[in-house]
Amino acid sequence: MKLLTKLYGTVGTLAFIGMTVAGSGYWYLQSIGGELSTATDQTAVRLDHGNAALGRVWEMIAADRGMFVSMSLKDMTTFEARVQQWDSRAHSAHNKTAKARGQAPSRPSRLADHGEPVLAGRNAGKNVFPLDDQFREF
Figure (cartoon, rainbow, N blue to C red):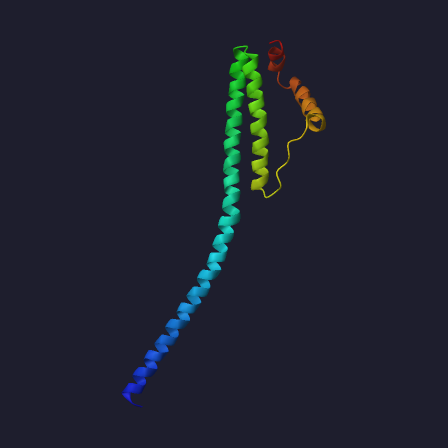
């Protein structure tokens, strides 16, 4: 065999190996890209909803502090505003948590449909929290 034939054979073999490696790398990048888009389209969105729900919970805690201060100052108008703020933040946190779990968020319920059990639960808790009777005097 001539040296030139060996050289062309070696270069051709290396070119074939290089093209095979490049093709398999392209295929690998396409499969990784699919997994990456799945991760960013689904997982990252759920994490964002979870972080938003955490923010709403901290806003609920701030509203609780505001309710305590308002009751200490015997300011009922501010207290009612804080209660409304807490209720809206609780509903928003529930929706964000449901979205983070991949469930459909709940729609705002009407007082006639949902208010009775909530009020019954609050009244049942008055035996657990003895300060509740003191706040009712205001």
